Image (tube, rainbow, N blue to C red):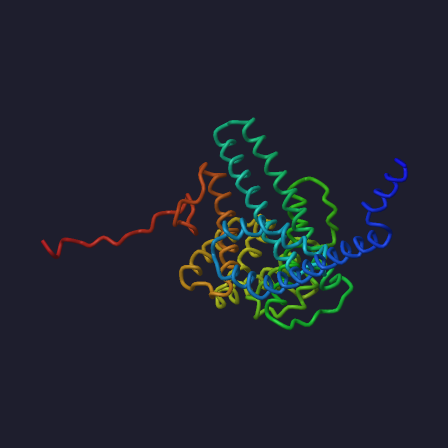
Length: 350
């Protein structure tokens, strides 16, 4: 009797086979509904970011805010690749920006190390050098991730044909992808760690710049290509002159108000060990930004170029006098001779 009561209650209290199937179906439907919502949200976020977030960001010259945004939102925005198509184009931009943030930290550590050497603080200089290498390793990983997403979207530039760009932003993201590749290699070298960046990235990037209109993109594609020619022996085609191409690209950038070509010219001058040329490029950049403001839609790119030129200038100043470029004096150097001032003769007045 007791057993029968328990049996009856058990059957009455359980959902039964049909009830279990219904519950599982309801749960599965709910999960599918969530996946659909996530996918829709991911698609919307990708479209919004490309159409509005990136163009909005390009209009600001606040590099600190750009760093904060890219580092804070990258995990959220890129995680939508788990529920919809990979946001490869967006990833190219986010990794380029966040890589630049890590590289900026590396440059600050370098300045601290140089200042410590000026003060004969060997341990402090060594510690700063270690921090610098760690930040460069982080930058290399971020840039390399951007390069991987670039290849996932556009194809391997070593094998794929030039893509067709439906919008200007597509061409700019292509350029950003090439910068990711070149910067990944440079940051890996600076870090002294092996991140896995292919050593032929420089030549691949140089070749792929031919897919971009040089005038439309402020002379930057040719400047990038010429810099690779100047730095990697055997890559410059016969009859070409890397530094003449860099000077031509400088002029295009100055005309457009986006002076990214100056950065490549400065890097090539450093690699050549030509201090006078490096100073001339820095002076030229300082004069150009005073004479013509950047176009509204590309303020961030020009601001990044200026920041990199200033970083090179700061390294030179700290290495020689122990402090960075004085505020408002970009384009000047510690050993500049004061300009001669005309003196008026008072003989004819008295």
